[in-house]
Image 1 (tube, rainbow, N blue to C red):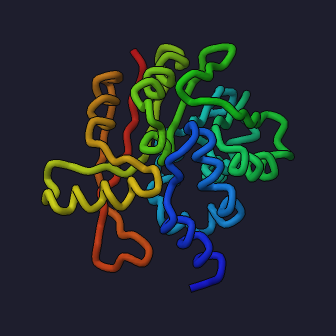
Image 2: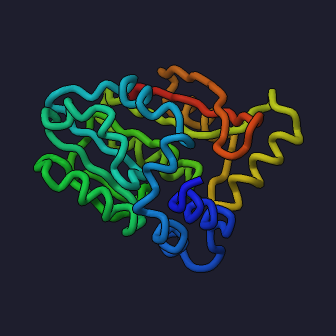
Amino acid sequence: MSLSDARTLWQLLRGMPGDGNHAHRLEAFYGAQAADYDRFRERLLPGRAELMEWLKPCPGERVVELGAGTGRNPEFIRATVPALEKLTLVDLCPALLAQAFERWAHAGNVCVVEADACTWRPGVPVDAVYFSYALTMIPDWRAAMENAVAMLRPGGRLAVVDFTVTARQPRLARSFWRKWFGHDGVHLNPEHAATLARLLPRHELREYRTTMPYLPGLTVPYYLFLGIKG
């Protein structure tokens, strides 16, 4: 185990602070691990490249990522980013956004915004919005979903990748993963995918399982969702 992994694991073991508002808790939790965030989570967060490929942002489109963190996900479509009209990366955590600012400082059409995914709106409707492992960290996740749908133009696309729990899992497994992730402020909820499906009846939902670093033999479900606004 590398020293940077050890630092990140120590922060994960300490868990998300319980005091202060959501923005304060995010900064307190991620501030010390922001520089190592992407490298460690490459093994932890599957399906992100598939999400961006599925979303298929096109030249001239306006795209928003809510809960963008370090701005890592647009790198999966790096060749397409310069052709977008605008890509807006929205997050509440200054420490993670500092990484996004540095990563995309060269790109004139990429805008990094410190704001709440539940309330921030672009000036005009957008073509695509996506969440990547963000909804499970947003306390008012329904408001975040509704806000995302509201900012889409008719025919616009909403894509999501995130961890979940399902009724097909044994009760003990569901309880374990909820407690394990909840310690770090990640709240697994089967209602997320069901609510997305109700908000956007034209959709496709795919479910997978993945292993966790340093937890051999254990797997957790995650899903990919793509919906189209009517």
